[in-house]
Amino acid sequence: MAHREHRLGVSETTLVNRHLKLDSSDLDAVKAAVADIDELYGLDSVSFDEKKRKLHLAYDASRLCLDCVEDILDKYAVEISRGWWNRFKEEHYRFVDQNVKDNAKKEPWSCH
Image (cartoon, rainbow, N blue to C red; front, side, top):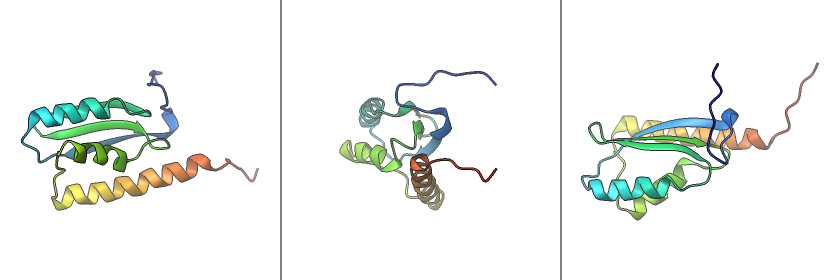
């Protein structure tokens, strides 16, 4: 497996990838939001696919969560799609992010 360098504050063990569909028609607002999201500590990468209207994120879930990203999107009035699949993914992402954050605080143990 190839070793990849990550940004400051990102650990390989707690790195997660997220994909969200956006409903915003204002591309300037989306680009401004992406630039603001890109400055978050713990974020590894962020990109926006204009054709598919998808926001792609990779971040350290022990330091960042989906709510932090959504706060920035709200600041720029960028809407996340309210389709059932996107809502389902959002809730799943929140659950996994919280699980990763909780497990990162625990001391690993073994019964051997």
